[in-house]
Length: 71
Image (cartoon, rainbow, N blue to C red; front, side, top):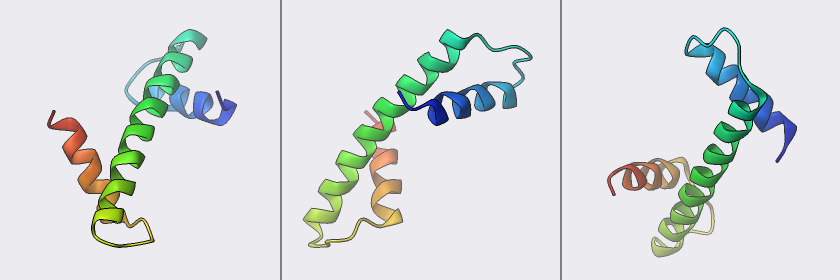
């Protein structure tokens, strides 16, 4: 797990009001974010491929993220 992602997870937890953040909480959030990011990117790549594009666009990622949440 990249330390940058763990650090960013800690910062996100602090942004929502956590005064103190357990290291395990940061790792748990980072793992879940990474899993969701992989799902979104796989879906976005499929969308780009379906439209015949070689380049992944922001719209592909937005649509992929929206469809992930609707399941």
